[in-house]
Length: 449
Image 1 (cartoon, rainbow, N blue to C red):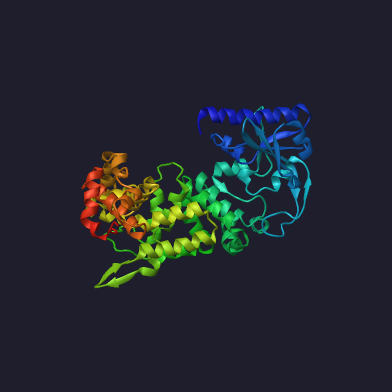
Image 2: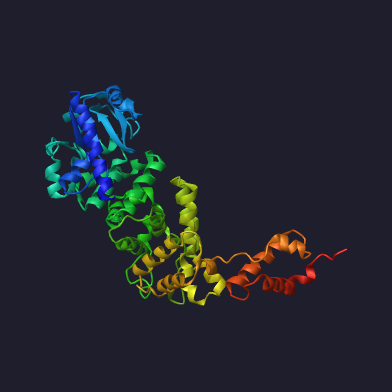
């Protein structure tokens, strides 16, 4: 996020605070933005709490959306940026493991005490930067731990998604999960199945795309959550690999190590999911032949398994198609130097090839470390022009009809063969294309009357 956008976001939040306070309402920053400010980080979002009711909030700002007015939440939009402004609230029992059965408006202290973790239970007076801490959040930030506000079993029974959120915060902040909080997650991990697939997918995506993803995956294993949400990945820890190609160890260790090389940046969600699932087929294809371990067909099996996972977690069609293609193609890099020119060019021009290349790089770095084929493809892409990768069509179906061919499957085959000949550098002009066609298929033309 650029400095200019950061300043705009902060100024918009302060404008909301000033407007509410000018009308006599208590107003504070709260939650993750306060945690980040305490830690010296610039918040990505600013959440605001106040004793103004939703109708009162909406009356003060020209652009609002009542995203959860029943729960006291209004979205205020300032210069195109959205801010969540919530009325202080107390929440009743959670009957579905996700939402409170009833809500009543209250005061700041009661509001922060119904939140999930102490590090997210801090409030701040925006004008002075004074932090209000009713839950021990400042001490836990110093101790670098994630701890629930109140008994962890109660907090996780209220909202089961908090178990995944604990892992996410711990991994992204580089904190430990406090012992009792961790025990509660392990003992209640099975309750995560009551959460919708979409919400589980969203939390997992946040875990694996942010710096700290490796730690997040290890915490999912340690707490038992991996076994519940992604059993197909959990089982990979039991799949040993041949040391000469995978000195890092089992398949799960290899998968996790790929996230070591995110280089401190947010990873594309499609690349992250492909990295996580690309070797899931190895658990079912591992075999020993002549004393050597093999995983013949693991690429195809991984696609099959990944497709079931992505359907279960209700991925969008676009994301699912991209991730499955990344997994399907990931083994082809070992053959790039032996490919015919047309085959290599078709490979290099695959949609989202930058993601294919990135996945291959991670796969190599997390195993044998040999990036020869990665650099070969990288250099080929630099040396080939767009016209060489996507040559302009020399002939069309209309040309073939004019030359006496009948519309049908043969015409499609001819056009594809002409493009292949172009990609191989065998033909470059329309006359050469016509001669090529006539030599191979001239005898199949319809006789002219």
